[in-house]
Length: 372
Ligand code: NAD
Image 1 (tube, rainbow, N blue to C red):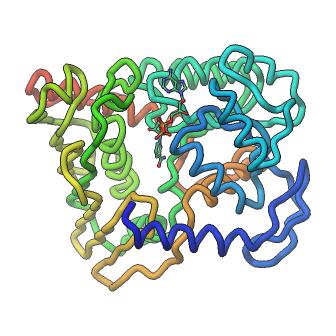
Image 2 (image 1 turned 90 degrees about the horizontal axis):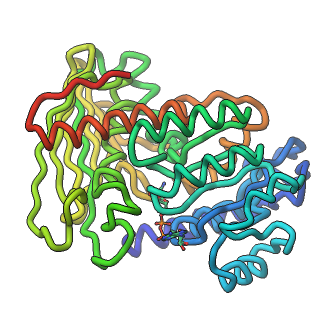
């Protein structure tokens, strides 16, 4: 994030933080319209206290309907830090060996899995067995087979499985979706998604297939994949893909550096996307229809998201994505709210089927069908 984005992000957090956070079980705080919130609160334990877990924890301090109450970590010093920073009691702290005991803890409703991609499958299956709801980061797993197993396990355990698709709650994104649904762009013809950043440290887990499950596609290209679906309102039925590798030492076998891929949708619309770990400033969506267009630039970073359509600038408010996501997910889990765009495990399995097909198409050089 650049410094201006950083500043605005902090400003957003502190402005929202003026509202009191709920204390336990049922809230007595105010929501953003200063109307007393007196409903249920989702009490969440975060698993994986790394970079993104820390961002979510900070953002949750401004939530009305969700509260951080527990942690799961393999690093005792991090647990101590989080306990003192967020007032987390000892009885809500777990490690990777004993977190199954969470099933006996009546003060935790859900676990948010924010560990490296290839660990999500095992972590989610183990959480589901405890009877707690699960929120899992993207990509939900590293292939569709694993993803389906996670959906089935959560269904069997009668717990909800949601995935951290924070853009599904972002106001400018939702406005473009509203306009598209209202027919304001006419028949959709084309989507372009360009997502990437220049990755640093060659020793990080994102470049280790055992932990990442792949390369840029798993990490950042998934935004173009998922975005192509919510921007067009369709799921792609075929894909072609080409992988380019300029540094085979840093990007080993199975870790893609840059992939260009094209989709075809049932309506005849097409998409052209780029996913990369080797270019900066790549965060753009473009949607073209017979009557109009939408451009989001940036489209999926932490914000502020900016965009325009053929009707002018998008002026919806800037939000802290993770604060809104967690409040909305509390509503989905506790009150059965329906999001505009799904954030459940089935939504993630579709993305994983597409990812499987992209990798297959890149390997074979063939146009590959996607079946849901
Ligand atoms: P990170 O490296 O900063 O943190 C990962 C955490 O997992 C660390 O605390 C690490 O100690 C822990 N961990 C547990 N077991 C581990 C093991 N065996 N090996 C390595 N680490 C282990 O990574 P991150 O950026 O926080 O990413 C975590 C997840 O969150 C990924 O799935 C990533 O795709 C996702 N993420 C999502 C967003 C978003 O905007 N939705 C942004 C960043 C990351």
